[in-house]
Length: 75
Image 1 (cartoon, rainbow, N blue to C red):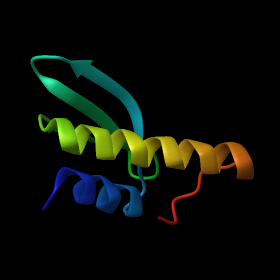
Image 2 (image 1 turned 30 degrees about the horizontal axis):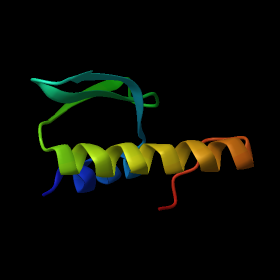
Image 3 (image 1 turned 90 degrees about the horizontal axis):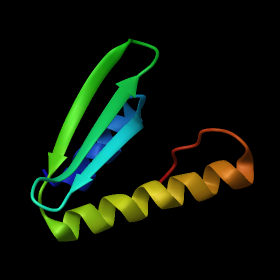
Image 4 (image 1 turned 90 degrees about the vertical axis):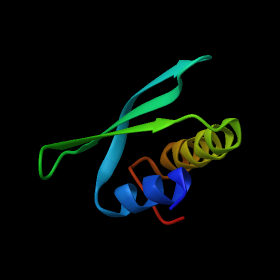
């Protein structure tokens, strides 16, 4: 499973990105939290292509949130 598909699956399960760390040597580390179940999930992405796809996905979600005024995941 690709990192982007894993992220989308986690969003479907109710997880949301609460913090990201980007390091040129380590790649992207994402911290996700499911607030209903109080669970944390961490993803480490090293592929530049996947990092770009994930950043684009998160930007799209933020744009939807700004337009609709609430959390929405329907992609």
